[in-house]
Length: 111
Figure 1 (spheres, rainbow, N blue to C red):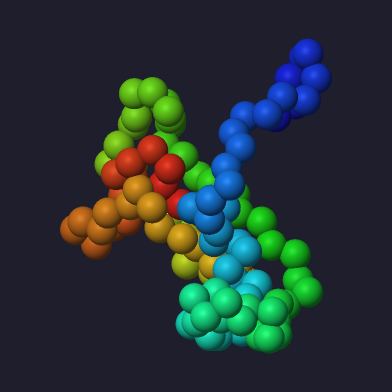
Figure 2: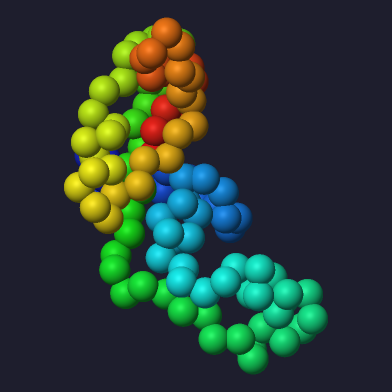
Protein backbone atom coordinates (compact mmCIF):
# COMPACT_ATOMS: atom_id res chain seq x y z
CA UNK A 1 0.00 0.00 0.00
CA UNK A 2 1.31 3.44 -0.85
CA UNK A 3 1.20 5.72 2.19
CA UNK A 4 2.47 9.28 2.83
CA UNK A 5 5.53 7.60 4.42
CA UNK A 6 6.12 5.48 1.30
CA UNK A 7 5.28 1.89 0.34
CA UNK A 8 4.17 -0.33 3.22
CA UNK A 9 3.42 -4.06 3.30
CA UNK A 10 -0.23 -4.54 4.15
CA UNK A 11 -0.22 -8.33 4.17
CA UNK A 12 2.18 -11.11 3.24
CA UNK A 13 1.01 -14.67 2.71
CA UNK A 14 2.84 -17.84 1.73
CA UNK A 15 -0.31 -19.85 1.19
CA UNK A 16 -2.66 -20.25 -1.72
CA UNK A 17 -5.69 -18.75 -0.05
CA UNK A 18 -8.37 -16.61 -1.55
CA UNK A 19 -8.32 -14.09 -3.07
CA UNK A 20 -4.67 -14.69 -4.01
CA UNK A 21 -5.18 -18.15 -5.53
CA UNK A 22 -8.24 -17.28 -7.60
CA UNK A 23 -6.55 -15.31 -10.41
CA UNK A 24 -3.52 -17.60 -10.44
CA UNK A 25 -5.59 -20.77 -10.75
CA UNK A 26 -7.70 -19.26 -13.54
CA UNK A 27 -4.48 -19.18 -15.61
CA UNK A 28 -3.73 -22.91 -15.11
CA UNK A 29 -4.39 -25.02 -18.21
CA UNK A 30 -2.90 -28.28 -16.91
CA UNK A 31 -4.90 -30.88 -15.03
CA UNK A 32 -4.42 -29.93 -11.39
CA UNK A 33 -5.03 -33.51 -10.26
CA UNK A 34 -2.01 -34.62 -12.32
CA UNK A 35 0.06 -31.89 -10.69
CA UNK A 36 -1.04 -33.05 -7.22
CA UNK A 37 -0.16 -36.64 -8.13
CA UNK A 38 3.28 -35.44 -9.24
CA UNK A 39 3.81 -33.72 -5.91
CA UNK A 40 2.76 -36.83 -3.97
CA UNK A 41 4.95 -39.18 -6.02
CA UNK A 42 7.95 -36.85 -5.98
CA UNK A 43 7.84 -36.62 -9.78
CA UNK A 44 6.47 -33.12 -10.28
CA UNK A 45 9.51 -32.25 -12.41
CA UNK A 46 8.27 -34.76 -15.03
CA UNK A 47 4.97 -32.93 -15.49
CA UNK A 48 4.66 -29.99 -17.85
CA UNK A 49 2.52 -27.38 -16.10
CA UNK A 50 0.78 -25.27 -18.74
CA UNK A 51 -0.39 -21.72 -18.08
CA UNK A 52 -2.15 -19.13 -20.17
CA UNK A 53 0.14 -16.15 -20.80
CA UNK A 54 -2.68 -13.72 -19.98
CA UNK A 55 -2.25 -11.52 -16.93
CA UNK A 56 -4.64 -12.00 -14.01
CA UNK A 57 -5.66 -9.85 -11.06
CA UNK A 58 -8.26 -10.07 -8.34
CA UNK A 59 -10.04 -6.93 -7.21
CA UNK A 60 -11.99 -7.42 -3.99
CA UNK A 61 -15.33 -5.73 -3.41
CA UNK A 62 -15.85 -5.30 0.33
CA UNK A 63 -18.84 -4.22 2.36
CA UNK A 64 -18.80 -0.63 3.58
CA UNK A 65 -17.18 -0.58 6.99
CA UNK A 66 -14.85 -3.54 6.33
CA UNK A 67 -12.94 -4.72 8.34
CA UNK A 68 -14.96 -3.16 11.15
CA UNK A 69 -18.73 -2.79 11.47
CA UNK A 70 -20.16 -3.99 8.18
CA UNK A 71 -23.16 -2.77 6.24
CA UNK A 72 -24.93 -6.00 5.28
CA UNK A 73 -27.93 -6.94 3.12
CA UNK A 74 -27.02 -4.40 0.43
CA UNK A 75 -28.18 -5.33 -3.10
CA UNK A 76 -25.37 -6.22 -5.52
CA UNK A 77 -25.87 -5.53 -9.22
CA UNK A 78 -23.64 -5.67 -12.29
CA UNK A 79 -21.89 -8.99 -11.60
CA UNK A 80 -23.57 -10.70 -14.56
CA UNK A 81 -22.54 -7.84 -16.87
CA UNK A 82 -18.94 -8.11 -15.64
CA UNK A 83 -18.71 -11.84 -16.42
CA UNK A 84 -20.37 -11.35 -19.81
CA UNK A 85 -17.39 -9.24 -20.96
CA UNK A 86 -15.23 -12.34 -21.35
CA UNK A 87 -12.02 -12.97 -19.49
CA UNK A 88 -13.74 -12.00 -16.25
CA UNK A 89 -14.71 -14.39 -13.46
CA UNK A 90 -16.62 -13.16 -10.42
CA UNK A 91 -15.91 -15.13 -7.24
CA UNK A 92 -18.54 -14.99 -4.51
CA UNK A 93 -17.41 -14.82 -0.91
CA UNK A 94 -19.70 -12.83 1.42
CA UNK A 95 -22.88 -13.04 -0.65
CA UNK A 96 -26.31 -14.50 -0.21
CA UNK A 97 -29.22 -14.87 -2.61
CA UNK A 98 -32.58 -13.93 -1.10
CA UNK A 99 -35.94 -13.04 -2.64
CA UNK A 100 -34.45 -12.87 -6.13
CA UNK A 101 -31.62 -10.52 -5.18
CA UNK A 102 -27.93 -11.00 -4.54
CA UNK A 103 -27.02 -9.36 -1.22
CA UNK A 104 -23.90 -8.64 0.81
CA UNK A 105 -23.55 -11.00 3.77
CA UNK A 106 -19.93 -10.58 4.84
CA UNK A 107 -16.83 -8.42 4.70
CA UNK A 108 -15.08 -9.46 1.50
CA UNK A 109 -18.08 -9.81 -0.79
CA UNK A 110 -16.82 -10.50 -4.33
CA UNK A 111 -13.49 -11.01 -6.06
